[in-house]
Length: 195
Image (cartoon, rainbow, N blue to C red; front, side, top):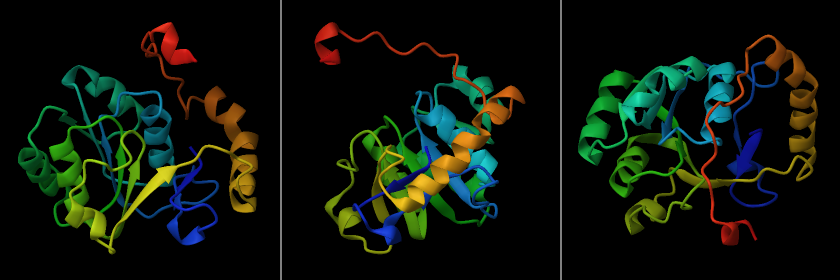
């Protein structure tokens, strides 16, 4: 994941999550909702390499060790209520602001609570449901952005520059173990979903 944008050609809506050799971030808080997919694993690692901290995830407790090995600092049970999730995140943040929420498959109440926790200017990266579970009031909030990731390195000159730099460093990042390949098996899909 090199970056994500909301509207094609709109640089103001971009979210950059990159290794530190491209664009370091100064200890901003990042939350991943349901962080056990093949999308979130590299994203957690790039968030760590970019300097985000704390990195809070929701997942099944059995995945705590894996997610912490990838860079998560806190793993919350994905079955928490929205209220319990918000309380736990506030305690972890200890007065810090939450700048990014990366939404995988998540419960609607947790998604709404995470959006409410975002600081002004914060961004929700909506990978799974496009933010459909947000309330109308949340959608109308102009202080926070809902953005949708795009994966093409040729989308813009900026993205091309970032990807060239990232691709140049990938062998070293994997060889040194800074980036780890996910060992989780992808789910088996019925053949009709592959077409």
